[in-house]
Image (cartoon, rainbow, N blue to C red; front, side, top):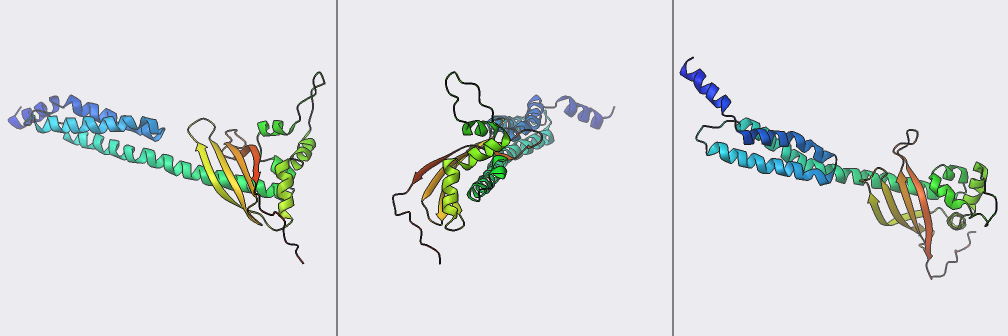
Length: 239
């Protein structure tokens, strides 16, 4: 074995254990794309990579693994940036989807298209439509048509239909809160009508369906008509 081969073998057998650790952390940094809480993994990868580079540089050639460390450092840095960015993009997407579903549902109520509106609510929301059974009385049974009738009699539906008689309704988002980290992403949206006037404020809670048939669809889980402003609510009569 000539001196060159001996030198190469020496460099191979002297691979920095810290470089290997940094590389493993770099690979593990991909978990940060699953949850923002796991960003500690790529941060640890960056720290260990820098320590590995420092040790290799101070070893006077006794340790190798610089390329491995640079790969680990690149993976860790990308995951530190990509993790929060992915969450931000996801939250923006969820907000846009939930807002579109909520506004479409409100428009269906305003147009008294109650059957279609019923298809946009959760099972829990259907239960909300049922009146509490009388004490000692038999359990209530509701068919689909009864749910449609009950939804049409809901105070929010009645108010929206009343307002829609004076012009097409437009809604503005006044507040938006979301929780997208659980198994069922949830959004809470507060709207205020801007046309025909700004008299109505309502709060809707939506859940993102995970059922195979409706996966990814945002459904209305609850709603509440919050207030009516004190200004004169009379609409001008059209001629």
